[in-house]
Length: 91
Image 1 (cartoon, rainbow, N blue to C red):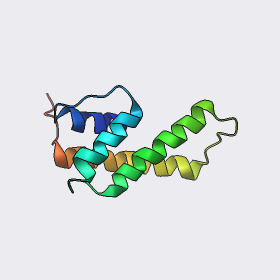
Image 2 (image 1 turned 90 degrees about the vertical axis):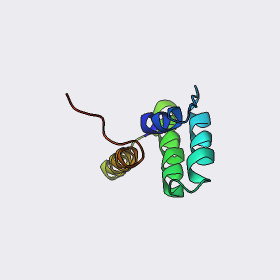
Image 3 (image 1 turned 45 degrees about the vertical axis):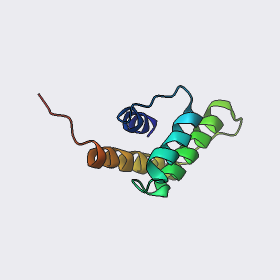
Image 4 (image 1 turned 60 degrees about the vertical axis):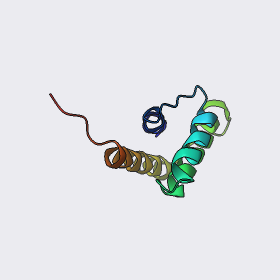
């Protein structure tokens, strides 16, 4: 999800080194302008929280259902990129 978000921002000439800045810029340049549903912004926020829990938390077990939900959201981000950027040509 973050790589897709970074690609979308890069397409606008924007680049950030922190996850929090990527999330904030995505909200500003895509969600607030009505280009993308606010759901995507919430997905990014949630995924960062899960990442932090996994990296730094002591009780960071993720259920198979939660993992499947994250995969589904990631697939939605890929579909979003396909709509906004288009597919890359296959050689």
